[in-house]
Image 1 (cartoon, one colour):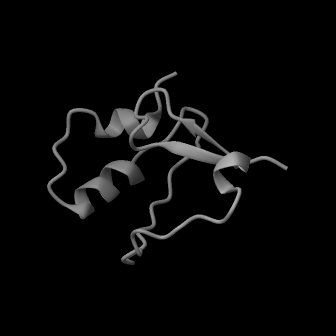
Image 2 (cartoon, one colour):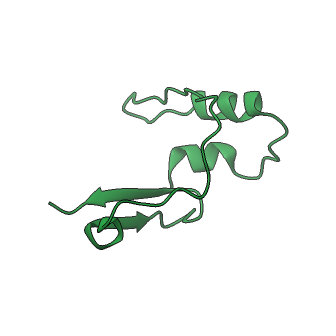
Length: 77
C-alpha cells in the first residue's frame, strides 16, 4: 500500500512550509484516520555525538518509498 501522505505530496514542488502542511493535513484514510500536522520551529544542533552503544542497540528501519525522508529508530531492549 502506498503511504497516503506520500501520495498527497507526489508531484508537488514544495514552495512553502504552509503548502506542505496543507497537503499533509488533508490526508486521510477510508476508515477515517487523519493526519495532524505540527511544525517544530527549532534549530537543532549539528555535529552532536551519540551515546556510547547507540549504533549497536538502535535498529534503523528505512521506509520503502522514501527512505531518505522516512525512517524509524527502534531500540533493542
